[in-house]
Amino acid sequence: MADPFTSERLPLTLRAYQKLSAAVAPLAPLWIERRLKQGKEDAARAGERRGITNDTRPYGPLVWIHGASVGEVLAAAGLIERLRALNLRILLTSGTLTSANVAAKRFPPDVIHQFIPYDAPRFVARFLDHWQPSLALFIESDLWPNLILAASARRIPMLLINGRMSHRSFPRWRRASATIGALLGRFDICLAQSAVDAERFSVLGGRNVIATGNLKMDVAPPPGESARL
Image (cartoon, rainbow, N blue to C red; front, side, top):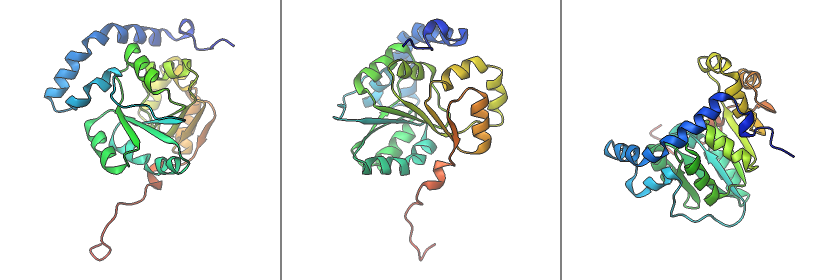
């Protein structure tokens, strides 16, 4: 069966994005160097931004969870614990140095953290070729077009979890409904934080949208001394 989202049928905006991101990919080393000087990258792991890693993919099913930064990474804590209890291996990606440090402190060593690659086709392909995730979970609203399109083309099941669509973002995306619809339509299930978020995702083209609540409410509080509290 043909993929209904072939590049020929993508909105012009996404086709232009694919070409532009491919064209600027050779500038990635310069951008990484600049971010290193600003203290925003880990020099030892800079290759991960181009899909290059020294880590080995574990054997068996691998659940890939992506969140933008610290808040999303911490929101996934309870979910990660439950998945690990099912003997599933976890690949956690995020985009900031702070979130990487939090992940290293918060999760056990068997939870693999990687920086999300820059959203250029060659970097995304390299990342997916290496990790070959069995399932992809995107937290909240960090939706990178090439990453989503490439994962969909490889028939990787994708879920949007803890989905959030702000009052400010919703009218903006409605004006670009074809673009956001082509991305949201790739997700097999969209789990939203609230009924309002669920309605907005449905209007924008999400499939199988369900309001499930906020994952952040399920995170256990950090340990504290009861006497001092």
